[in-house]
Image (cartoon, rainbow, N blue to C red):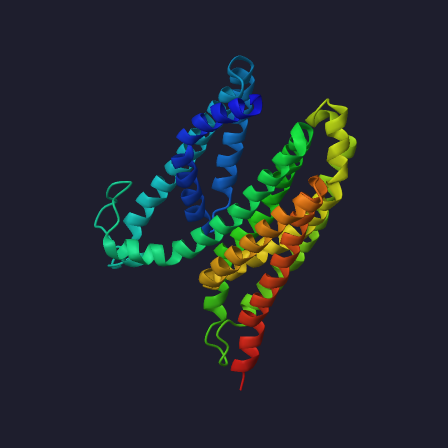
Length: 344
């Protein structure tokens, strides 16, 4: 009951910041689409520093609600940084449009910069939804499985839930490496498609394949580093996360599964970015929902037979492995087999 009360007070405050999460995500995507990775990094760093300072000031007095309030205030700062940069970029683009009469998604070019935000037309909304809806459904399917892990972990007791929270937070922290590579694939692959498309009957082209291979090699190396660091942290700095000996011991029991999951995650997210950049969002959405339903159902049955966090994190590890196999197959089909079939 106590855990539920703290969680409810936290969620109530965090819910206020959900529009900021959507706004920040969209603004970061605009920056990455413009091949600007520095602005999102700066915004995240600024928000991170603000979050730490806010936690120090608010948590001692307000507890979980104070932590949530600090996060919301940090999100406001991060969103403000991104919006200021994008507004300046909007003004520069408006000055350089010249003779162009239309922009992407069918938006009409303006003679001046216009307002910072406008209500999109029906035509622009339809085009945007055609691109965004499959991605939304894919992410929703992923969230269903991720939430099923926490639900399963909640049945192993207070200590088990505390262990899961620590390990899950570590996993999410190190997942940012894979997320960044997936975003990079979406930002840089379209230019490689333009360079190689149409040559010698090849719909994708050698530049795209070379870039994909480089990103996959980088992600594999990054995954090894991620897995090593994540597995060493609980051993070397266990006291940083908790002073409870039982929780410290529990973290060690699932450290291997977490490390293997991170080892696979970097390459998996890189290939996910490749698939989205290749226009296969609908396929990705279907795969995620099939995976999530099967894995969530299988996890529910497994924890009834073999209760414990090891079962929960084994499911996470298998989920990463299955995704990697599926995304590797799709990438090969899109960029190697189709090219081979198109060659004279």
